[in-house]
Image 1 (cartoon, rainbow, N blue to C red):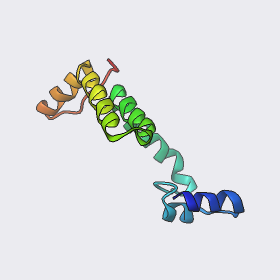
Image 2 (tube, rainbow, N blue to C red):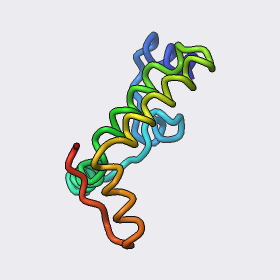
Image 3 (cartoon, rainbow, N blue to C red):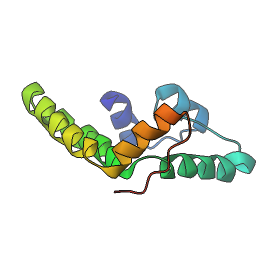
Image 4 (cartoon, rainbow, N blue to C red):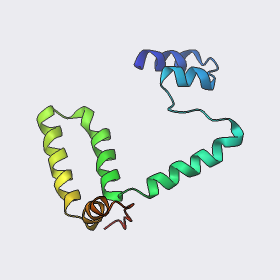
Length: 107
């Protein structure tokens, strides 16, 4: 939380990976030898996702905390409608029905 972040910033004490993981400052920790493969796997997973959906989620997570509940829900509805009109949305539905992995194009 904010108090721990302030402590880390103000005291400038060294922080190891285990402390960061325990505090929730990072999601995962990998040995150096496995880091590149783990990063590549994450990149591939993100690249296989629908870009418009990822952008909408990012926008909601960045703007959401500053919005009222009503404004947040309105923005969420607007973004959901926009994403639902994409070719990627149709591809996602088709892939789900056909029980296959979707191929998103960003359209």
